[in-house]
Length: 138
Image (tube, rainbow, N blue to C red; front, top):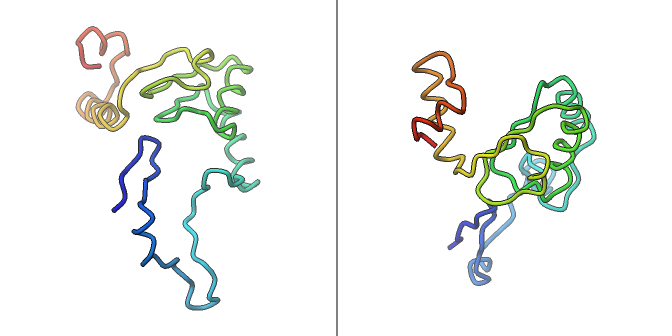
């Protein structure tokens, strides 16, 4: 049995690994890997280049559910700040970029984002964050 951890990882008891088998490719017999970057691995250079180009073209940066302790995420906050772009964050707890963030909502992304989507669908125009706070919806 795996217990979910706050960072999205899981605590797996050693005895649960006894029957675990890595998924393998029936064509090449290699280990199948998901299309994600695991902690400690490098982000593929083409993905990094694409993300940096998108950051350069963006008007601001929204960070959702990240402590930004890993440099590959934190660097986007540094780039935004150096370019004078506003940074907003939705995160429970502190982040490595708290000193760079213009607006931080200490809220669960799981709880907040569906409400934002619902609000956008209902009104077709988002309310200013100050009005949302006044209504006590955060």
